[in-house]
Length: 623
Image 1 (tube, one colour):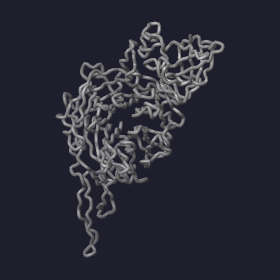
Image 2 (spheres, one colour):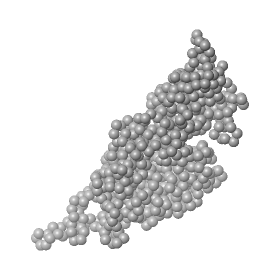
Image 3 (cartoon, one colour):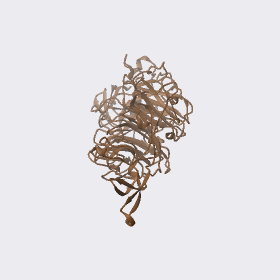
Image 4 (cartoon, helix red, strand yellow):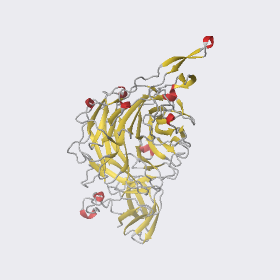
């Protein structure tokens, strides 16, 4: 009777067993091995290795091609089929219609002699001799077209399951996005200086917005102005956004907070963007971290906002005509928490530049022009004043907006933005001064216009094991039932998860939480998505390695205590990749219909050459 003691991926790669004991393997890969005893077929018997979707072998079979004897009786090699899905691995020997099959998937997992855990190694606690395989796909052509040498890549998914990605390219000073199904990438920004971070959002099937740091400046003190030809800031691409002059070319973009206020490039980090719907006036929500004031900022704008309007400018006794307010516009923001400066409170004093009549020429030949008046702000050397067109005033949250907590002087850099089922924004972030994980709930679907349209609360209770711990790599999402899911890295570097015990569709109800749990021992660059009510998490465990990418998800079919009843549990596993993972944020999406898509979850990563996708194929029905 055959018995399997070990299943291993091709020895070129270091891919660990999953928390459940399953082995991740890659479609189409050769030289995977099985070790055990009684693995050689007697004379007249046919040797086969199969994956079956059911432990008893009554489900769908996937034959593992090229079973080859490596060591007589104790070691076989095989190739994973290109169509394989998750299943139970079996070695069988068949003669005249009668099969002898390995016992591993049929014996009693609860028996001590069938357990394979190692004392004091928590990752092995649930290992038994059951031989289950988790199947991955990562082909050479699974990448986003045009994503050569991607910097700050980001990935999102349309409602139909099509993946999209955005990225910067330093060598070309460009920002791009592409669908995984596209043959080319779409350029959304080109400038003189290389852009930095990007974040992408897809509303509906294919409505794309890209939020990015247009990291440029003209090089002189007088270039620190709102003029788009002189200095940049945070821009959001939208196909309907006004074309703004960025010196090198016009780019369709909404201009959020700009660099000229604090005269610092790379001022903003950890960009987040969400769009409500595909309508032209659909709201675009953004959130980000300000490194100057150590604070969390939020803003929003309607997709049909258009500040374009011709105006004249009067300067040094000369009238200049043909200017466009689009090149001088800046979308207002709210300072949620952290430090603040004078421009975060009731700023500016007027939203639209005033106009003043100026005369050119003398007597009957004189011409009068309405010219935009300059704002009162000047450059350090006093050489220039400038026009700025705001859509609203800026605000910072006051003490009344904080529930059982207080405003801090400094937040951490990490934050995450989500929308409730009713499209109310929620921002989760870290209070660095007090060591507290917080969230801000919007009380309106358009909460930018007033400082009273937010409430801020703590997430972790004082008796939580992670209360007071340093927090980083925050990600959040809201499920189809309205519950808020949050993941983060704690002081020990562990991957932690917490879920709300109630819902707050319109922000009026304070979220309540149970206790946070540790999902994995080590995690960085964390991302989270929720399919229905099932959370999927991606994270990096190692850098510049084949086993660097990992995922975790809640698997309701797991029977971890081996009592015959599936109580469900966290599955964590290494992605079976054939390329190394570099140190960029992981991204994960879960397909809405995995049966038709042939994949359950997808992770975005880069070895450095291209922005690639690896697919967890799953069992064909999701978890």
